[in-house]
Image 1 (cartoon, rainbow, N blue to C red):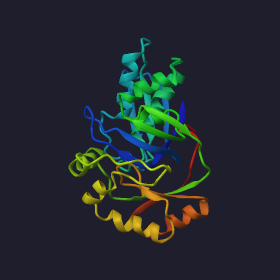
Image 2: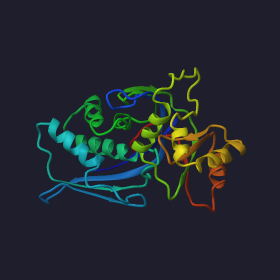
Image 3: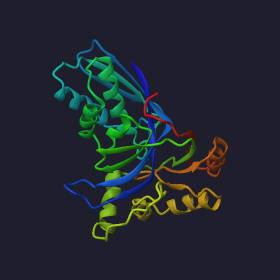
Length: 276
């Protein structure tokens, strides 16, 4: 069985002090048309075989979001999960704040549910996915949604027609754990921040934590804003950033601001769901 699963951006992201080891968030997630490609089939080998290849498949550990998703499903469902061969082409960069690992976990859960005719509901898959990562439940539906709590509260929102210029420094990946640790150092005891009435706000509460570790981000985002691309922000904990555009042409113009330098850029449509 083959499917593609989309990346996401955070059109805004608010973070709150950790509770029981996890930081609650309030964020607008948007699915964008950059896809990892997943191929799942039953195999005759005596073990489950998970392979990654493609432009962003480097240094993925043996124990990863996909193997964790398979374990969660196996422990939950009484029907034996057979030997599997799973091949994933990684088009979504790692360490970029685009949710690629969570997307892969959601895609494998969805594929196995269909391939093995397990009949599990999206709600059940989301519960299993939350054991793997906080973002996995969102990726089982995708589109545009307000995400709160640890990621378990998902409020679907209307998907606007639009395009995104997505930009990632080619050689820079951000560690989510380190970024949140730095946020704690800076803001864990600060007064709670009031949320704006108008969302998305294109404010990312992790920006200053990222900037304190990677000060090169400031001129990059400033370049977009000085060129008239006001709806620009870091996504997730970085290292990718974006600007929201009305048309493909505008997204391509924003990407062109970083041409000839050490950046990966994509002009991408907003999409209505995770799977294609």
